[in-house]
Length: 300
Image 1 (cartoon, helix red, strand yellow):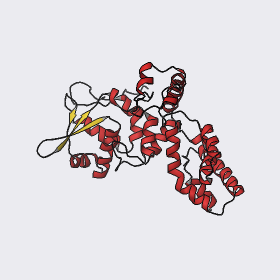
Image 2: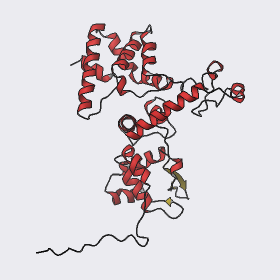
Image 3: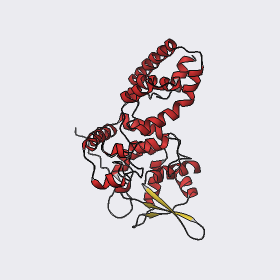
Image 4: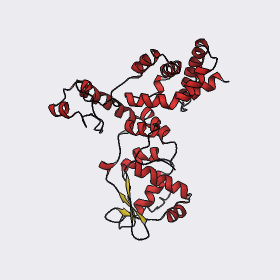
């Protein structure tokens, strides 16, 4: 006995009772802006007109999405930081109007962003509400195929740039010559090395460790040995990123240097932390590559 085919109705894609979001946002940026970016971006896209202008209020989005005002602010903040939207304050009542920007405007300079959000210097858009972006960005660069391909591509570009001769105009001006197109001046003795400014000069983990081990300051040597122990978890590529890595860990390193830990105790702690990193990697957990992890190992 044959069963009767059950008729089902699928949704109708005709008419204008729908809105769209870019595939690229869902594929790449949703994870970076989670958990606030995707719902807020959906709310803005749903209310956008033909010119891609959208102006829902924070209260309206909060009620519509079932999230707090702070969560809405966090979503708007990270979307603006990534240049996915632009915020303009207009009218006598100073209301916010949001423009949904083209994909070509979206930020893709992952390493530069990581440097911005992990440095003590403030970026153009201070992330007051959206927290944990540096961890998400780090995980994206180290744990996704997109991030790995980007890093491999940058490595090839850096190698090409470092071997390419500089133009006469670069040698003359010494400003704006950095291959990262920053505004920092390029020192004359560095122009021949590929027109990198000091903070964007390539520096591998091995080079950083070798430099740190030669330091007369014990806390710098501690940071260097720690970087050697957790090198697989670090993504620093330039001198500027390594300098900010030092700034981020310097207080902890100074505490350890001033304590009574000898080099043998530190070496055991390095090995324990390295084993912890491998165990966490097997279980798919994120490892914190900051020096605080070492301090916890020593104070157990």
